Image 1 (cartoon, rainbow, N blue to C red):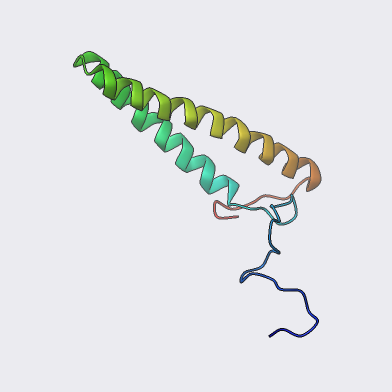
Image 2 (image 1 turned 45 degrees about the vertical axis):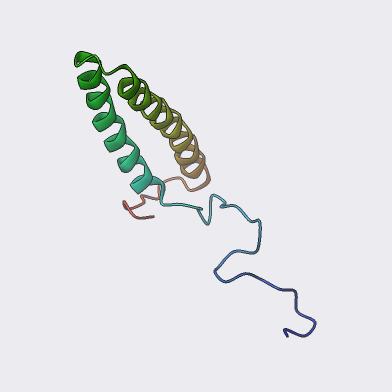
Length: 95
């Protein structure tokens, strides 16, 4: 029993909390690199599947490409917000 203290789940953030500009929820630069990698790989796979007349596979890979594009837009939006909040601060790949 924790006594009168409210229960907090393990980790650094309280239940239901999302990241802020000061304390990001994810490593945005690393997430950007991974989204770009996924975009390139699945764009090539989409093209190869379409060239081989594999319609279902090309549609599935195309959906992943569209998801990567949306993820890139969200990442860039959050990076711009962080840049406005912390002008002149350069972040490494893993923060």
